[in-house]
Every structure is written in C-alpha cells, then in structure tokens.
Image (cartoon, rainbow, N blue to C red; front, side, top):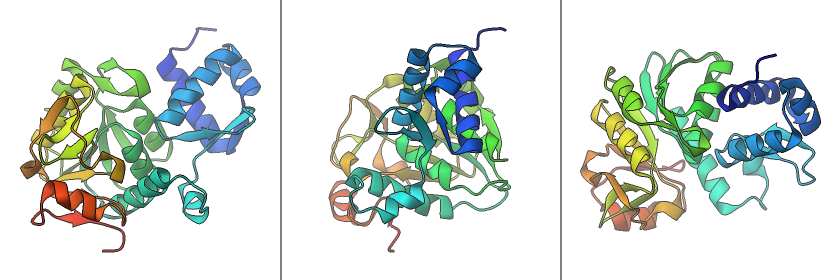
Length: 255
C-alpha cells in the first residue's frame, strides 16, 4: 500500500474521528500503516489547530464538542472565548456566500459551527479547515501552496489562488491587534496570505480572542481601517476597544 502523505493522513484522521466520535491511537496507526508515534504527532498538530482533543490518558482522540465547552465552567477562559467568537461569527454567514477563511485556532472553531450541508463556498489555505468542512458537505476550495506547521498553506501558489476570486467576506484570525501595529502576525507567510484575502473580499471580519488585544506581532497584515467588523467575546470588548477605537464596529454574542 502506498504510504500516505501527512496531509492525506490528517484528512483521513479527521474523517475517521468525525464518523466514529472517538478512536484510539492503535487503530489509527494500524489502519493508516504508520507508527503510533506518527499518529500521536499528527493528532498533536490537529489538536493545536483546534480540531480535536486527546484524552488525558493519551489513548484516544475525539472532535472538540464546542457546545460542551460552554457547559463546563472549568474550561480554559481562552477556549470559552474562542467558542463564543466562533459560534457568533458562524451565525453571520448567509446561504450562497463565497467566503475566505484564514488558518488558526479561532477560525477552526468558526468552521465547526457552520451547519452541515450549508449552501456555501469556502476558500481556505487551511488543510485542516478544508478537511473538516468538506467532510460535512460544504463546498471547499483549497488554495494549495507550501504547507506549514498546523496545516496552513502559504506562498505564491496560495496567494495566486486567492487572487482568482472575489469573496463576499474574509473571516480571519491574527496574531495581534493593536493601536500601534494594526493587524499583525508572527509568521510572515501567514501575514501575506491574510493580506491577500483582505484585498479580495467585500467585507473583512476579524476574530479576536482577548489574548490578542494589545499584541503587536512581527509582521503587519493591514491597518485597522480595513476591518468592517471585529468579533470578540463578551469579556474582550473593553480591551479591544482601547486598541481599535470607539468608532470601530465590535460584535459580541451578547450584543
């Protein structure tokens, strides 16, 4: 049997976990023809991308149930914030749209809240997002490009693909949002891809968990003036407003 590329493994893992809710490392390793160590590494990448969680004992993996996160007060504040942001942002999307969705953990939660078989076209540089959404019956266009950690495709190919389209909206996350730096990223190639998505859409929505407010990362994506709406959690409004100004449109689950 041909050995699968890591990208193919990640897609099959997401499909398997989505269909069976929880699977163990040994079964995945046997089915995909790789070592348990390789499976653990794959699952770590998918977990860091916001798609699944591994059990405390390390014996299995299951998709993150974002509804459950809301019901458990012991959940990390940042995870709760991402859940609120992702769920609210997904509610803004209308049938028939063509949208860009950037890579990242907050946009991963957004993707999970999009309804299955929704009449929508998603163009994304994230292989993880593409795998999840396509397995749920949503039309996906993957940009192609150089695959970085956490399954983000970047580089000339990704940017050229993005520039073939004009989307109704771009849904992006960033490394930081600040008065000083605007929208910034820690990885230059990711900043370039996000900038391309901003340039080729009618409306820009930036998802900001409270930990990103006031942060200035190394590479600028764009100025604050390009953003039509910021979406943050209920506890992130004040800190975000100090960075983007009272005139900016900030949306939250609680209005």
